[in-house]
Image (tube, rainbow, N blue to C red):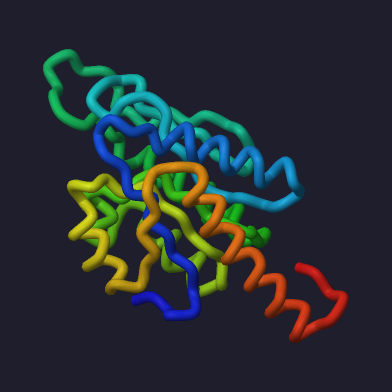
Length: 183
């Protein structure tokens, strides 16, 4: 499913860690430096009506929770709202990007649904991808990625180091192919 030349990073987190703030700050810093980061980062909790996400390329917050039902239990993700968010991210990717951030690898992505199509689209377009992956889902992630992934601990230094390697390699390849031309 994944090309060995593409860069796919799993930001592996444990329950006590906050990959959302880390990814949101990372995206903000890259965007402030003039790079184009596309994707979304989760806000709120899956088990209540606060579940939402911020589109990192526009700053817009999208509600992802189902309409509140006091009798409901478990994750309240509204699949229609997730699909709509995915369509908006796909449109943003069409205008090019330097990086795709996907908020979570969950059971929908494991099953080839959810936002998995965005990962494939970005990799097919040679756009690096970073996705938050729970330690409990890491074995599923490895199967999904066919082993073609970098595992990063959930800290900013690891993320910055990975990005430096990816962005330097991409810049060198572009300059070798087309001196003086930037994407």
